[in-house]
Length: 311
Image 1 (cartoon, rainbow, N blue to C red):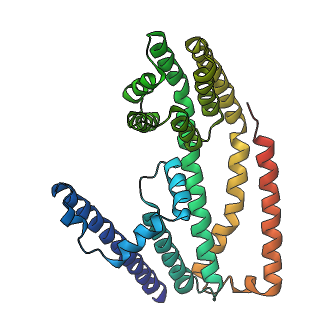
Image 2 (image 1 turned 60 degrees about the vertical axis):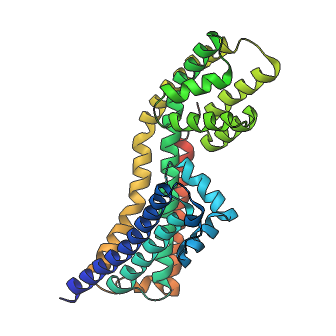
Image 3 (image 1 turned 45 degrees about the vertical axis):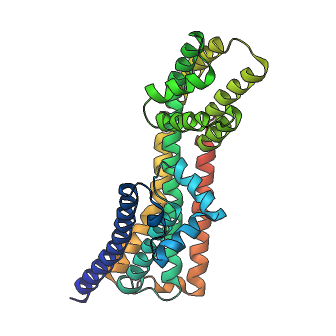
């Protein structure tokens, strides 16, 4: 009976946290709509704002938020850094409540475990979405090269070729080239715009593409022919990479699944038997945890290096 009560309390607690986030989110969305309907009047800008929104704006203008904003853009997550941190804190609070009330973990183990799960979970989320977006962009590079080549052969400039790519490509390349088009239309330097695109993409293929455009700008040459050759080379590399990834997929899957099985079993036993994990947080138990984590980490590193074949 107590277990069911704890589950209900936990769900209610998570519902309250999520409700608070959605209330804040929709309040900000409604305020933005009001500003649009008021045609950006000065009186609207002087409207009294809540302390939470002021704190969010201050955080968004900080150096930490600038780094986080770049990571969110690379992961194709369209929220502000302050909103992402709000989700981070809400998730941390919910997991701490589960660890303390349902799993009966002692302080500070409950806090450390909740923070570790949320921190590493957010890290791997951003990394996986970033890699997925980069793979999509790399898959579009041959088409990008051909569009740019056709534009240059038709007598257009690089800037006009970038605009054609923004009009004809699918996501995620469409948004990147649309941003470059807007920046170029307001007088931004081509080299600065391309360098920002390269920094955001963080792809070796994109580095070659941008470097080729910049070299052509300074020294000239038959850029259309070079881009056609680049498109063929990227397609060949992509085929080889897919074959290698298919051959190493099984080893990678086993490497990631096996370490999670003991963690899942411990969580299940903690729910069935309250306080089951407490002996692990004695001095001897901490030594065992350190040894297990060290062995698993070494195994993951070895498997990653064996399966990380560069093309």
